[in-house]
Length: 276
Image (cartoon, rainbow, N blue to C red; front, side):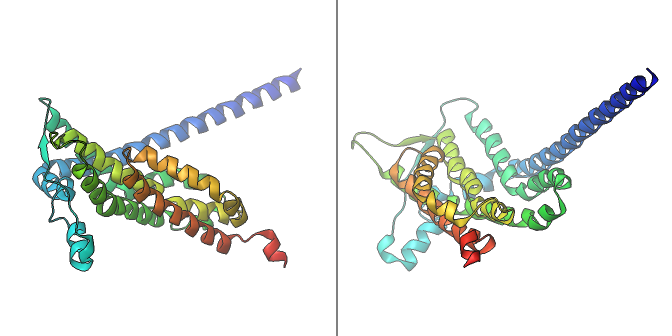
């Protein structure tokens, strides 16, 4: 009887320790989230204070002929001179400019503070990894940040100018004028940049899976046709419903997929190739 009481007491103590450990993890996660949110809000406040620069130079930049991409293509590739139709931006609601201002500030706050946000996420994940996994993921914050910023830059300097030019010049009738709301422009600019930054993380995901022995190049080659369908579907989701922007996203995504196969082949070759 005494032995059973001792066992029950030990089980109760173990359950209390497990519960405390779980609560400790929740508390730690809470502080990581708070620090990440503080970094986003801090950058967002700075962006909010410089509204003239942010809107005139960043948000409205791709809508003007003087934008870098238009000048670059026209100066270096004279046959590819293009630009958007002169856009007349309007607001339809009383607080539209104010709420768009807040929205832009928060999105830019997330983009600019991405290294800090991802670092907080990684600090929470890293203690749970084994030593081998930690070696594999060394430098992950820097690499993911560079890929994310590359994707955002590609969306801003390549996808946005081509898409805005196509959509602003598209017309079904000469009697219909393009008057665009500020909210619409902000929504499109968000779709052109933020999702593109996220999907550009594909090579790093493949690198880690291959390093851990969970992915082989033969697997990626066998699913190449399936990947094309998934890429086109993903491009349709994160871009407006027109063919030009879908291919502007889909083509680099497919190139990233092929690059990921090369990375996978170097990190974790197929077992048959190692035996031969």
